[in-house]
Image (cartoon, rainbow, N blue to C red; front, top):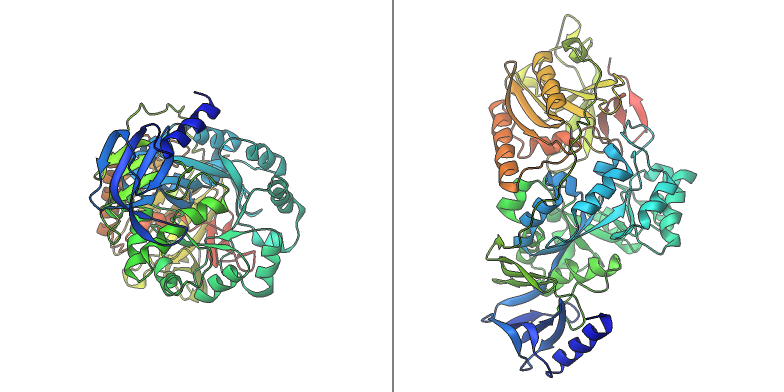
Length: 575
């Protein structure tokens, strides 16, 4: 049938003149328009909702819901799917049982490694899945002029990406100093999106006052970087959609729950930004955030609206986000509105999950693998930090956040070089350029890993340029990490006593695995256990490690060019 015939059939089904394909009978419908929860039925035809209400429809298949709540498919308003470490089909299998129907993804991770071909590869791999993956065109590849990335996307590249299917707008504009300075290259990308009337996402950690006004004046309408109440209130008051973020290393939901209860954040939405497969399997996805939001006192219907209709409308997805006639049949039947555990997940009219298990299956899309870790020769001498042991800048990790603090303290030294002392909680961090084998290596000292014995952790996931980042106590173990990452094509690794303790190969651009979620989760658990044997207490040490080089987040960062002060936009001498 063509579109006209399908529409005509949908109207007949809605009127009760023809049976639908699927009837959900006897549920409690969560109305995201009115905030009401009322008993009713839902009839589906050709992948669309034909009717909602108490009418006596017929369908080829009927499922009795026995009063269980019916909600729209959930939407993650901002995610880097590369940070899940899963290839899109495997990510879909992991997310669908939690009721996720769509994610808005910023693919700037793979774009920083492979450029436009990387984004096109992700688009191809995310076709015909049991959830919809939409993309935003990366705005900052590299994130700043201080970075060493594997690719660079200018305004012409952004224009090209904006014309691709399922690309909805411009992704987070991270270089807010460049926006405030009116620099033409970044403003040209914003104009490219605005000319197409597509949304522009922001990334402005800590920005307030008149500087925030200037940033929003550029046409930026969403932001996921708020960590303080006043910061979020100012952004909401200026018309930004505050994306309340709760991921594996960024925990902002608890801070903003009082504002959500009082309904003071306007059109807020929920987002994970960066979430690991361990957290998805053990806690859930957007449904887990709804659980916490409702438990804090936000009315469930209101919370669901902000996880469905609000992000759908913001990103121009006018065909989804509600259980209503004429909307796509992305429907989730929950066990209740406290636990938000899906018992039935329907995507485009097809049942894709039952009782926490994905029932969709297909052959995984093939991907050509290329080792993207290209480094110049590295020796143990590259991990020796010369210092007199006094007045040395140190990066202090902030628990539950990706921001850091810059502090100054005397450090232990021997023979003019930093040396590890377990009671001082200081580790050496090294960032190694890995795209062009330039030989650039930046060093810095970090407080927060709390190593109690010699060892090292290494990663090729190093936001946003994804060079190699190593944190350790001695040159020997740090070199073991580098060699393991170069051999595997990237990933995570833990080492001690000159040997690899555990590793997870991320052979797709050094960012994602070809394995299924169970394998990736198991290997990640082994890595976390290995980090704990070194004394590291962090629940997600590799997620924390991956943000150590990010030069657009305050304050101190370790990049291949050295220690960088993001607030002052300048490098810091460590000696």
